[in-house]
Image 1 (cartoon, rainbow, N blue to C red):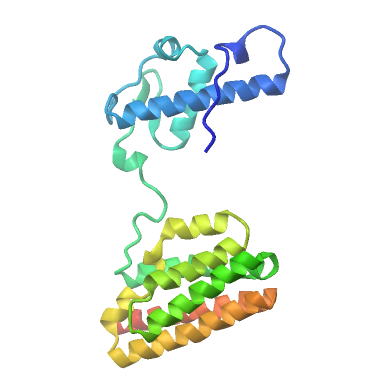
Image 2: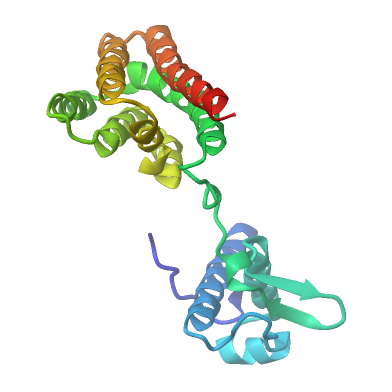
Length: 257
C-alpha cells in the first residue's frame, strides 16, 4: 500500500489559486494521513471506547491541517464504524466489538444452516469466477490450478483432510479470473467455508470416502472446462459442484430435525 505523501499544510484549503483536482487530491491525502494517525492512537489506547475525541480546533492544531481535512478524516472513521457523532456533543469512539466487526465473522461452521448460507453465496460468486477463469487465465495460472487439483487428489487418496487443499484449488480458480475481488471474497470467508468438518462427524468412513471421490470428479470437471476455455462449461461445473454440497447439507439438516 502506498503511504500518503507529504504536502504543504493548508495547501488544499488556502485562498491561493490552485488547479481544483490536484488541491482535492492533496486534501484527501492529508485526510488519509490524519485518519491513519488517529487510528494508531486508538489502537495504542490513547482513546478507548466511549471516549470523546478532541474538538476540531484541537485536532487542527495537533495535526497542523485545516478543519476540512479533520472533518474528512473523521468522516472516514465514521463510515468504517469506528466513531460516531452525537449532535451537540462531539465525536466518540465506538466499542471495539462494534468497530472491528467484519462481514462473515459470525459464521459458525458447526451449524448446518450457517454453512448452507455460505454455500449459496459461494455459488453466486464462484460460478462466475470459474467462467471468467476459463477465458482470462494465464499459462502460469493454469499451472497453479493444475497443481492445486493434484494436491487435492493426493490428499484425498492418502486419506488426509482435504479442507486446505480444496480451498487452495478454489482460490487458484478465483485468482485466474483476474479480478482481485474474487480471491478477496474467498479470503474473507476462509477455509472454514469448505463443507468438510460437519461431514466428518456425521457420516461413516465409507460415506466420507465416497464423498471425497465425488469431489475429485467434480473438481476435475471444473478444471478441465477452465483449461479448455469453456466459459459456460466451467460455470455449469462449478454450479453443479456447489449445489451438490448444498444438497448434502440440506439432507443433514433434515436428519437433524
